[in-house]
Image (spheres, helix red, strand yellow):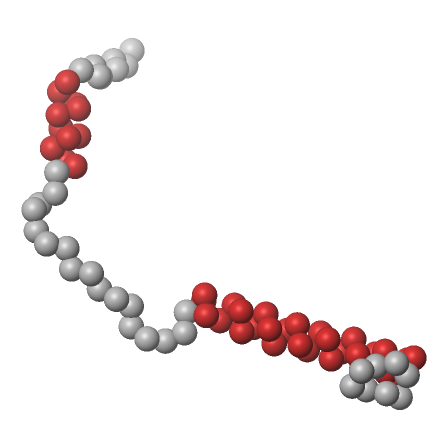
Length: 72
């Protein structure tokens, strides 16, 4: 049968020593320029909403003659 390890102070002292930092300074590096996904999502969403508005307006204009931009 397999034996389980004891959860006494021996393993916790190893875990505590592994968490200690090396004591060096941490250098903060900023990302370089360029468009990220956080910048692209609002732009794509805006373009798609405007395109959807125009398509619906075109359909209303050609079918019913009541579009804001397109009148049939």
